Image 1 (tube, one colour):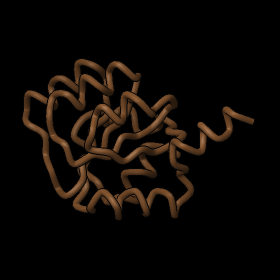
Image 2: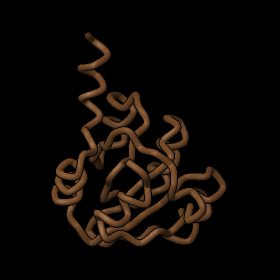
Image 3: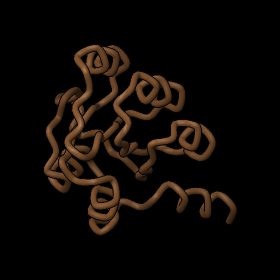
Image 4: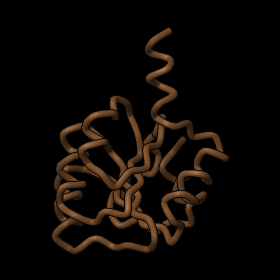
Length: 122
């Protein structure tokens, strides 16, 4: 799914990466615990989170996550936005809750990251 489609589905604002809206995202992962993201994410995902903290950007950088959507209308600080810009990470923000945002993306065809784990074991 293209980032431009994700933006439309979530009625999200783009905070960084407006020039990367044609990037394809294979899976989604919703989580506020970055330790879980580090433990379980292995694929090209968009990370949906309510955690607006530098650790989210650092985690994304470590795992080559190219897109993050902040939920519940949360907006990162200008420092966080600069960090994401330096790392070429797309940031979006949506007013939807984490549950609703994940559900909307799933309903529109974006699979959960655990589907990729199942496919790896085949």
